[in-house]
Length: 67
Image (tube, rainbow, N blue to C red; front, side, top):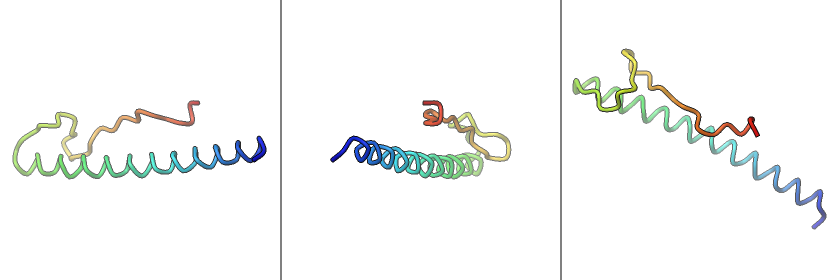
């Protein structure tokens, strides 16, 4: 396998990982919304990061575009 082929494989893996990161981020967001809605329904605020309209505060821990 040539060097350029190896680089192409690495680039493909990076793109796949970035796609998975986005999908996982969306899942986390949806789970936080559900948890926030449940807390609102129960009258509790265990998460502490929900806004009044049950929108969770997301923090992007890993932004691959920075690298």
